[in-house]
Length: 160
Image (cartoon, rainbow, N blue to C red; front, side, top):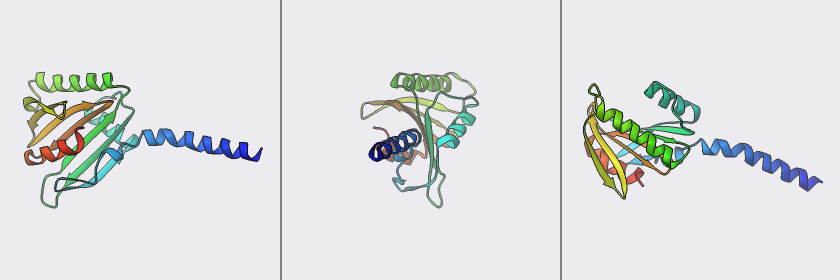
């Protein structure tokens, strides 16, 4: 009986921890990329709220994380990543975002270009003094904003 109670307690603790682990995407965001150090990390409900606020509506994301990378004297780079229900949903959300950026004449994003990085389609835009990269991989949707000379290190570190 004692062993059964201990086993049940362990199962309950694990079951409660699994949703919290699934909500934490921080492991996808390295401490440093190229010469930039991670100076801010937002995960969980706060990150999902920031993603929704950025888009002006609630998005279908199961988890989100946001990281800011910077040097002492440079403009920060940002990485936004969200886990959605499936690869098909990630593809749909990425396509919709790229389409809206491309088609909106008031969009601050210009010079759209499609790149291939290790077999993944990456959509590149310029605007607001940075390069913006958007892609999906599995059930993850990514957005990176960085200076032009920082783009390759971010692609190498994250786009896989």
